[in-house]
Amino acid sequence: MPDIGIRELKARASEIVRTVREKRARYVVTHRGRPVAILMPLESTEAPAPAHTIQNENSGSAWEELKRLGEEIGREWQSEKSAVEILSETRR
Image 1 (cartoon, rainbow, N blue to C red):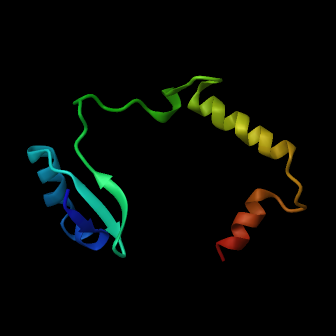
Image 2: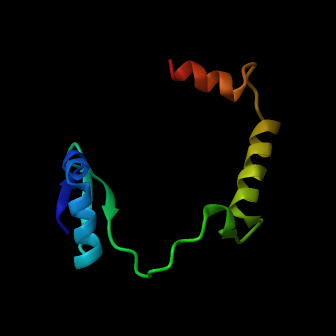
């Protein structure tokens, strides 16, 4: 599998995706020389299922699992500030 830097991928995205689609090529995408992703063709022509329909073996859909995790985090939240306030501060 050839390596392709993120900047090169950005500059040649259409060409690279066409090669993946038509020639079934695979690429290792790198950022600053380190591998971060693999670009490869899908094995089937069917579109992947939306995330909210993927079933979790313990609690149903992925969406239900995210809601459950949010509630769990909320119950054990110990900061005086909300998660939104903390996130807003880190983005400044």
